[in-house]
Image 1 (tube, rainbow, N blue to C red):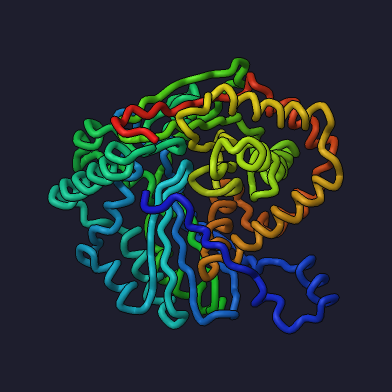
Image 2 (cartoon, rainbow, N blue to C red):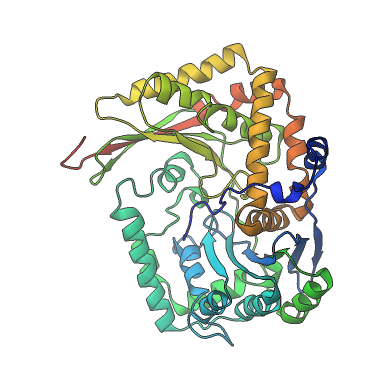
Amino acid sequence: MKYKKLFLMATCLAWLAGCTPTEEKQESASFQVPVEYYKLDNGLKVILSQDKTSPTVVIAAYYNIGFRIEPKDRTGFAHLFEHMMFQGSENLGKMEFIKLVQQNGGVLNGSTRFDFTNYFEIVPAHKLETMLWAEADRMRGLDITQENLSNQQGVVKNEVKVNVLNQPYGGFPWLDMPQYANENWYNAHNFYGDLEDLDAATLVDVQNFFDTYYAPNNAAISVVGDFEIEDAKKWIEQYFGDIPSAELPESPDISEKPQTEEKRFEKEDKLATKPAIALAYQMPERNSAEYYAMGLLDQILVQGDNSLLYKELVKENGYAANVNGGINYLGNMFNYKGPMLWMFNLTYDNTTEADSIIQSVDDVISGLEENGVTQEMLDNALVKIRSSLYDNLGGFFGFGRADLLCSFALFDDDPSRINNIESEFKKVTVEDVNRTIKDYLRSSNRTILTLKPTAETQN
């Protein structure tokens, strides 16, 4: 996993340039992301979104395989395979894909998430055809050799050691909490992978994984930016159209049973000098009214220095310097498919008791439940989440838009949902939010994980 959050915050003012204040208000309220969606005969989902404000294009390839459904005896395999995708294909040798992008003034990356593995390039607009050809070349077939596999097994194991095993707070809480809070193996195993499982991967495993999950009928391609629609369609058909589809396996059951009792766990960290705590609540079903209500509650409770938990835990009690939190620590509340946690965490001084922090959290949530969320609080949350949404859509040269388009294509077969997000939040009523507090922010729906420092020097 090369990054946890790729949405670099940027504004959408370019879309509104030249408007008077009244026009700006009307334009921002009615702005629609251009979406042209179709499928190739081999099942590849294609989403085109033209935006000529910058002479660049984003090409994003998303595959419907993430941490959740990797083989049970090959933990970390989805992530290992992400690395394999940069090791060469039929017409591009080892690392030549990366050189191709960088030598043409572009940037690229890839990541493995809960429900997808993605690859993207941002390049000057006139290099669109080149990058479509390159993405198709590695979708068509990788250079799968023992040398490449052994090399990347070493790279991934080193990444696990550097980012998790030999790092204070390594994996806390984004990697740890799902393993404690969830019951279904698909949601609860070590996504980064056990080192023994990584070592056990064979060439046959790699080839079977590629043939099964990296087929066009298990993928979505989005193009966002400065390009001509007909040119893009022609090149996509030319380079991707004859890649054969695959017979996809039946999707496993990734559902979680409703949580009925609070869970508490403690983890020791020999490198940490201060304790930390994370609280996670099971999320409502994706796209339900309660799901959108939780998005607004996230804004009310943890997002920004005007949030209730920030005020209580940081400003009032001084337990921590900050409170981090959100829905889906490996992305955002829109780019996942299965069960999810709403979570927040903080580090605190050794003189503070974890129970004091938990009691303060309970005071805030019980106060919300007793007094109810007001319309003013809801309106402020709508402003914050709308700002965050448009930052994401405009961020990183349009990658935020490409991400949501591919996610909605993969999970909903409907990338135009990108234009309904704001209206769905506006449908949420005070009654919806107050009901969601009672149903989902109850102590019996949460898991508490405390990290105990065991380093010799503690402050």
